[in-house]
View 1 (cartoon, rainbow, N blue to C red):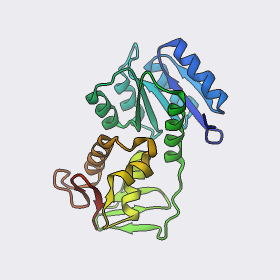
View 2: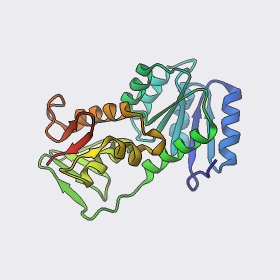
View 3: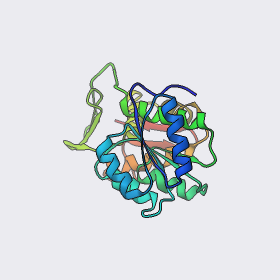
View 4: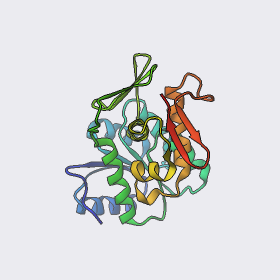
Length: 232
């Protein structure tokens, strides 16, 4: 099923004891360090103590809704969050992604696919860019590849690992159209080829953070049906 990235830690927040145990057994067998929590409050506390490389989060928790846990985590950390849920409605998926989740896996799931998605989430959080230039100046925006940061009018903008991977790919191709397929493949991985709603959600999040007027963007431009361009 593929080994975990070296010494990676995963926090599993799920209120089904049997499922949590099964996940822990399979993850440890693949080389992960695993911590489990069975409700949202203990999950938030465990995230602060355990410092995971990725959080695997069930939305249906007994004390807090999973979306509240996502919001709680995003208040202080950019750790990748992979949602695991029986909710298959598109609106639930978009809401979770919009709040800052990095991926969404519906139950029932294949363990090898879940492992692949966890590994991809960790890689996005750990990748270090080695671009030809160390910074890209777009006027009001500056993209610092070495520090993996974006600043807007001199102020650092807090990005999740997935938001960074998205904007970095566009920045490496500044002024050129990057197709939807290329973005999905390079940011999320080959199994995401048809998840185009991810692009809409993350483009909207980036515009809210980077554009003066998100409804009329100057930098992050959509070409309908084709892809995205980062304009200087």
